[in-house]
Amino acid sequence: MPIAIVTGSGGLIGSESVRHFAAEGFDVIGLDNDMRARFFGPEATTAPTTERLRAEVAGFRALDLDIRDADGVMRVFAEHAKDVELVIHTAAQPSHDWAASDPHTDFTVNANGTLNLLQAARTHTPDATFVFTSTNKVYGDRPNALPLVETETRLELPEDHRWFGGVDLAMSIDTCTHSLFGVSKVAADLLVQEYGRYFDMPTVCFRGGCLTGPQHAGAQLHGFLAYLMRCTVTGEPYTVFGYGGKQVRDNIHCHDVVTAFHAFHENPRAAAVYNLGGGRASNVSMLEAIGKCERIAGRELDYTLSPDARIGDHRWWVSDLSAFERDFPGWSLTYGIDEVLQESYDHNVEAWTAAAAG
Image 1 (cartoon, rainbow, N blue to C red):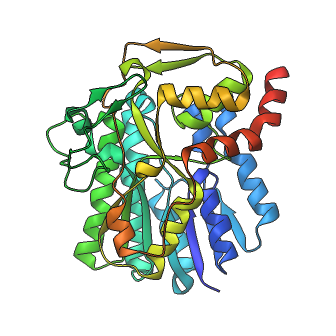
Image 2 (spheres, rainbow, N blue to C red; image 1 turned 90 degrees about the vertical axis):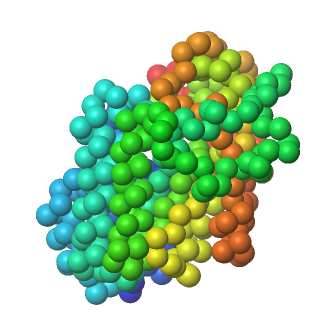
């Protein structure tokens, strides 16, 4: 039985990967030490998801392992070397704001942890497909130099601009502000590329926009769409940081992310890089997202517009998916923003309402 190793297996993309590849006939080893609870508090813990995966997914084995433990990571790869065909690396510290509060932990998790996994894969499973969930934050605040125009509900590019359909890999990552989180992810992204080129390993960096799904444990510092819907349902106050709420994000459902992983694994190549998000089919401004959440939940959100934007945050981001669609024509998006929000509401409304009442 082939083995897939999934880091961050209790998180949004990690847990979706576990279920997907187990259904495809893999035994799955998950590495997750629930650091998300440390980052964002007990309400963001991944422990319940890990327990559900243990109970519901045949062939899944969960290991409580910190990816910063180089020896521990090496032991896992050594033990299963002959059977590992796929490594999906989703474990990360994912927040701008949290990174600034503890830069050392942010960098060692995101950069050093990635290096440990790459070196273990190179040593024991160099032919295994290595999938890395990078981020569009590797571009820093470079997108903020785009010539955006302001409409009633959003910032937008002129239709004749080269990147109106989405930003491609030609955007520079240099001479701009990244946030410390962005820097640690840049380091990891370049490591994954370099191991692919230098050691001819099948690696890919997916530079994600906003990744979401019904099981997303949205928190104030990360996972804005899930957190926005939760606040709308429960009446918790929400703060929109900067740009009058007109900043635009593309959002991609976890199902579509993981099917992209699968498509790449079926035809891998060395040192591949793709921007991956909702693209033009699934993007929304904060003001537009608030309106959609209010319509679905049937109640108004208690929100405040703060004039202070987060350092390195994007005014506008839409991913150009054409390169991946060209290389993997069997893959396509299956969720739009309205479907994402409705599913988030349907999946969570009872639990969120009960928690707020208790």
